[in-house]
Length: 203
Image 1 (cartoon, rainbow, N blue to C red):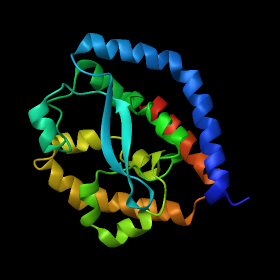
Image 2 (image 1 turned 180 degrees about the vertical axis):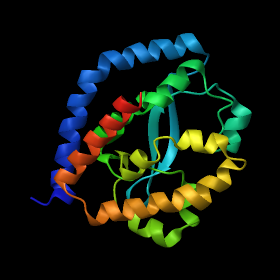
Image 3 (image 1 turned 120 degrees about the vertical axis):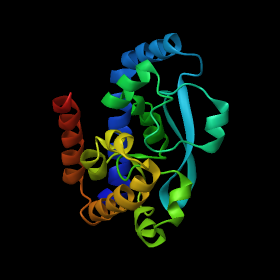
Image 4 (image 1 turned 60 degrees about the horizontal axis):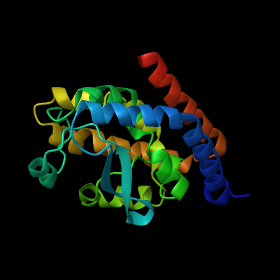
C-alpha cells in the first residue's frame, strides 16, 4: 500500500477519530470556559489553503475577542491585543487546534503536514508553494516544532508581519519541502511524538 495515498488517509482517519473521542470531554469543558470568558462563538472558522490550493474552512477554538472591524482587516501575525484570558492558555498549549481533528476526519487535513496558511501568502513564494501545496495540510509538522514559540518571536518584533514573511515563512516552506521528500509512516509517527514531547516538556 502506498503510504502517501491511501495509507496516510487511513492512518489519519483512524487516529483522528479515536483522538476526537478520547478528548471529547476536554472539548466540552473548553467550550464552556470560552463562553464564560467572553462573548462570542465557541469556534473560529477561517479560509485556509488545502491540497492543490483549494480553500477549506479551518476550525479552531476561538481564542480572541470578537471585533468585527478588525476581523475584516484580517489577523496580523504577532497581534496579541485581542487574545482572551482563556485564549492565552489555549494557544500556549495548542488546545485551540484540537477541533482541527474534525478537518482531518473530513479529509481536508492530515495529522502531519504543512500547517495551512491563509491564501494571501501563496503569491509571495509561488515556486515553493507549488511543491508544498501538493501535500494535504496538517495539524503538526517539523516547522510547527521548530517555531513552537512563533507567537513570542512575533510579539517581540518591531514589524511582526515583515518578520513572518521575510524570515519565518520561507524557512517554514523549506522545512515543508524537506518533509515532503522524506515522508513516511515512521517519520509521521516521529513528528507526532516530537510534537507531544515539545508541548509537555515546554510547559
